[in-house]
Each structure stands twice: as C-alpha cells, then as structure tokens.
Image 1: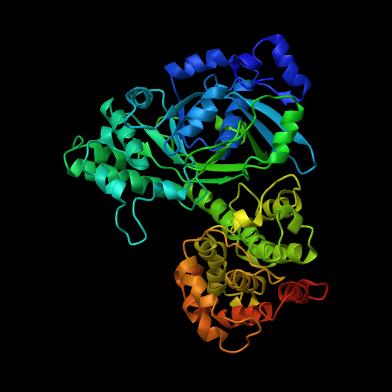
Image 2 (image 1 turned 90 degrees about the vertical axis):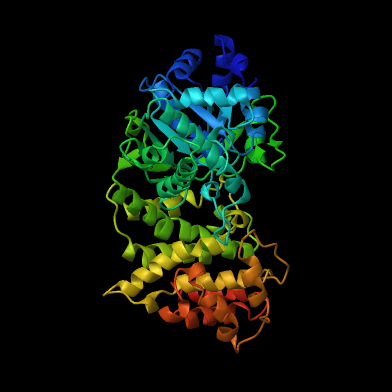
Length: 544
C-alpha cells in the first residue's frame, strides 16, 4: 500500500486500507481540492506535526460529516524540504497514529490538506499563488504553528535581527525573514481591497495573538514609514475590524515520529515510510504519532466570519476566558508537572515520561504540585474544569505508555519556563490573604532539583548531557562551583541565580523561598543516591 492519491483511490485499494484498520477520508478529495483552490478559507503556516495531528484532523472530521466542503492549504516558510520531500511526494496525505492510554492505536489517513506551498520570495510561482490565495474574498483564517521563536524580530540585546533589519529597507515582495514574508502577503490582501481576515497564532505560548500582532505591526509600520507600502497599510493592520489577532490556547502532545509506530505501519505493509531528516535538521515522516487528548480554545474574533469549527471540538470564547484556560494549563495543571518530571527524570535516568508516572515518589511529587499547591490558586475558566483537566493529565495523559515523550526533550529551555510554570503560583500565594508562600513545599523542591540538574551529573554520579537552554552559559558556571557534600555557603554561592527574576519570575530571597530551595539543594548534593533519598524522605508514605 502506498500513501498517495493513486494508492488510496479505487474500491479495491481503499478496502485494503480499511481491512488494516485505517479510517479513510469519506469525501471526494478531488472535489474538495478544486473548491479549495477557487475559494480558500483557511491557510496555515507551519507544516509540522501538531498541525497534521490536530487541525488537519479536525477539518478531516468536519469534511467527513459534511460540515465543510473545502480543505486546508499549508505553507512552510522555514524548512522548504518538508514540503518538497514529504508533503508533495505523498500528495499532501499523511497518517495519524493516535496513541491511546488503553494501549490501542487509532490509524487515520488524513486527506484534508489539499494544497501545500513554500513561502519563498524568490520563487515566483509560489509567491503568485500565495498572493492569489491572500487576495481571495473567501479567506477567513490565517493560522500559525511556527513556535514562539518564529515571532521574534530581535536578539537577546533587543536589536533587530540582521534579516529583519534588511527587510525593513526593501519592498515587501523581496522580504526574506519569516514574518516579513507573511506581512508581505497581508499587504497583498490590503491591495486587493483591504479585505478582512483573522491572523490566528496557535503556538503554545502566552498571549500568542499579541506576539504575532507585534511582529506584523512592526513590519507594517517600518514599511509604511519608509514609503515602501501605501500610507494606509499600517492603519489596516491596526484596525481590529479588518485584521484580528485572537489569543488561543492549544494542548496536544505530538512527539517526534517514533520507530515503534513506524514498525506498526510497516507491519500493515505500507511502503515508503522512511522518515526524512532535512538539511535544516527537521525529522519528518509520512506519519505523525500523537496522544488522543486535545484542546484548542480560540478567542472568537473573526472579522471575515468563520466556519463551524466548534462542531469539530474547537472551543470559542472571549479573550479573558482564553487567558484563564491558558494560565490553568501552563501555570498549574500540566506544564509545571511536565517540568518537574523532566528535571527529576533526567537525574534518575528515565527515558520516558510515562515510566516516571510508575515511580511512587515522582507520581506523588506531581500530584502534590497539581492538587495541593496549584489548584488553590487556579481561576476556573468556566469552559474547562481545572480539577477534571488535572485528573485527565495525571490519570491518562502522563501515564500513557504509548506516548514516546522523554524528560530530556521536556527539559529543553527550562530556564525560560520556570517563571511562568512556578513563578505565577508563587506570586499568587504571596498576594493571597488565606495562603502563605511558606505553604509551598514541592515547588521549591523542583527548583532545587533544577539546580542539582545543572551540575550535569545524575544520581548515580554519571555525567548527564544537559538539554539545550539559552541560560546554561550563565547559570552552570555558578552551580558547578558547588562541591558534592557541601553544606555551608550555598545561599551565597547561588545568590545570583536565586535572585534572578528573569528565571523564576520572582526574587526567591524576597519571597522567602531561597532558604527552602537551598536546604533541599544541600540534601540533593549529599552524594550518590541523594536525589532518590530526598524524594523518599519528602514523598514517601510519611511525607504524603
């Protein structure tokens, strides 16, 4: 069996897939593609795994049910080889392997993506087609999963990146930076009649719509000021009745394509499944593997209207509700638990998050962070119940043995995550009339665990390769001055880190947590096996 149009068309070929347990598109894909080409309604930037596993599958289900009659257009603006070497050879089809907590694997051939494009200002054909799409009256949604870094126009010092600075001085059609090329397409929509559209970031970052708006607006203002666009372009971008930038909250774990899933598909005798590693080091396969659970909450602000995506499970709400859902997830009910498991998983040599959930001490750690320390300061968003969300995380999502997610992956960029994942809770306790910061016991244990992790030695005394983090060059030299078994002078040595509000979101000395963190840290560095001993001490039967 082949994953392309020819391989799934015809009764005999289709039945061959269905006999192997695959859910197939139940619509005329050629007709959907033709209607999409004439009247596109949704263009998505970022051809990665979460888009293929989530948004594309939602649209597939709505096509199957007859709610939609048009499909998706995907655009890749960073790694063109994803389109050239994976999408187009498979006629934009992909396989979604849904890894369920009960041990079963749902298999779906997703055909809702009916056109793939490359965001390359030097490719005339690609550019003309994208301008045509952006000029269409029917276009309602331009969405993004390009990671938070995709919206950054400046470096760590606040200076514009060289590619961005260069783009400010050229006409839009010659832009080379990602957001520059996107803004140039929005200018094409402006030139076509100042048509409305929603620019929807679906990246997993706080206030993502504002980040996208800030980046696009910066280009619009520079180009308008330089006379490179019509004088009204910046006003068009800033007019929310024309261009909206809704906030969203997205939650679905889609790890890198796993060899065990590839083996399942190979056993079904599907050909040409070999993943591709592009020259930009992107690992991409004809299939994606993902958990079953998924959430997407979108601020309902669509100036050109929108389809009935709520029939596909997407939730729509006002901005305040979206923010509350996002804070519930990121500050309390999921992300802090992930980070705790990542830190201690690396120290205890775990290779899967799911395996950690079988460890009584680690399970106890995340349960106490979630239920005891987090839930008391959560504001119920109304459309999702925090306790039920947390129950699902702890009982189904994190323990799912078929999710090949690793603590090493989650440990990436930890210094950039602590302020939101724990700092928000610390501040909430400090501001509360009924709670005290000193009530927090597990959050300081996680922060101490991170400092212990930075020593790059596991609990057995073996070297650990630290996951990438932009702050490693700053924090590691400080922590690595500490000697194993040291008990004195820890607060003084670690002072530059513990007071760093950019890392923790608070000054740990001012909140009164520095002493607690250092006390835990001193125990964690007592010697070989100290990490496990500390977890048993505070999370054993007595500690719970």
